[in-house]
Length: 89
Image (cartoon, rainbow, N blue to C red; front, side):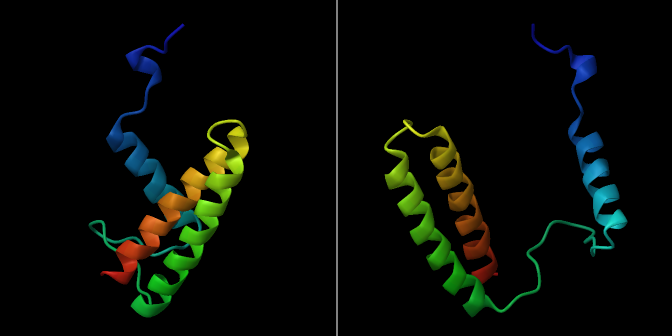
């Protein structure tokens, strides 16, 4: 059974929940989306390291034989992109 529209959170509701979470953990909240303050060289260095680990996990997953490693590889790829975005400002 598919959820009804009443069961789904709107983007605005999700954004509000994320904002509340960040307030609760006392994390800074920007008025608009932006990258975090960082050393771009370090972000680039770690993006390469995480990319290497992502490739190793993808190779070890052997396609979709190992679902856990496949998801790990995808997650690490996302983190690689996030770090690279910070390296590029």
